[in-house]
Image (cartoon, rainbow, N blue to C red; front, side, top):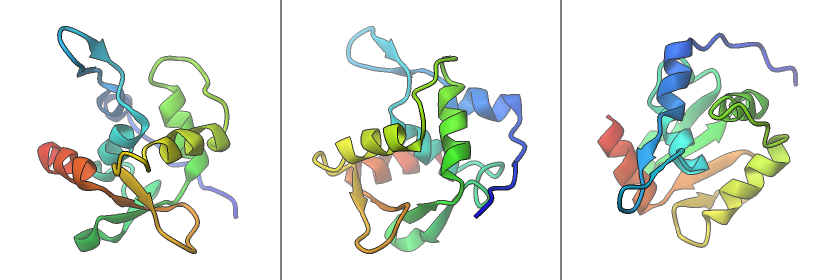
Length: 123
């Protein structure tokens, strides 16, 4: 399947990549799951790049994973490689219950409690 190029404004990219407060005085880049939540609440990327499969159950799908990775790489000007590397960072958040895979579905995830709380703060 060929991904169509979705134009995303510089302002939106800056919003996705905006640094957040970590512990203490530490300022950090958003984690991969936080980045996805930001994409979900933005009309420039939802539904063309990422979309809700079932918003009431907090289940979403990565429509254009390569575009998501390109936006992710824009945050610090570094390339973290391809979708496989990005997907590995998402799987890291399974054990904390932040994201959960949806069985038998590719590119589909369910938000855990921390991700749901974060989403509600963004809205």
